[in-house]
Image (cartoon, rainbow, N blue to C red; front, side):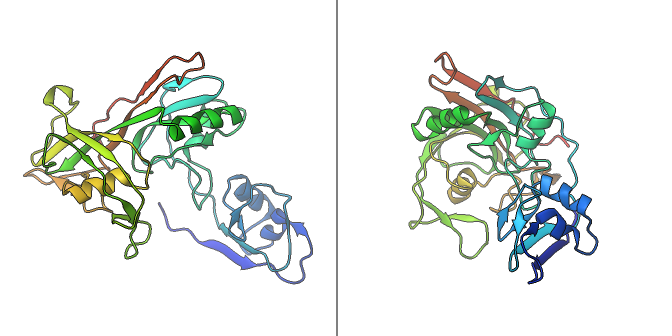
Length: 300
């Protein structure tokens, strides 16, 4: 992504309850038309809070921050939904697509892409997330009832989440459980670490037999299936790094960026949300089994 420059200013004392689009539009290299586009894109923050209404009043002393230009839209076409009913939408999130709004706005996020490509009346709501570099099954709520329904899946233990990963080396056993607590890493902003002071976390793993693989495993690597029992930030990546077999392509947690004797470059984080099983998850009470095809991690 290119470097972005920002309008970052405090509203002067000469402003009394003026509209946000008007005040932002007075900035150098901006205009009221561009200001409105930035606000609509969810790219404008007032006092640290995202504001999406053009007519929102701003007052002297308010801190406004917005990029000088709209972030580019990725040329991403979503696969057909894995499931859709009146309450929620299940999608195969592509790698590189943010699951939720970023500091640059909502453009290119999964909810906004879904709104546009599936002609939804409003932007669907995020109840759970995948890291931007992780692909696979993700569900979005289409209304308030959908939000309550999806929330109950995760808080009441109805949802079982399974991932596929390619790791460097391999775990100490063919299957096992990791229950290391996870905390923020004070030495590395935005990253996590296994530490006794952290929140409880549980991951189950098993080595995948060759019959279950969709591609050849590079020398020195192992394919795993992972069961996520808790949803801590970066949990799978932290747990596997702690176990001594980090995810291939994981720049944050020391995963290798080349594999094999010929040093093949790794084009992505080799982690995929493969299945989401929900007991009684359908509208009629039947069990749901949502599955996103396992990608070829080395496809360019």
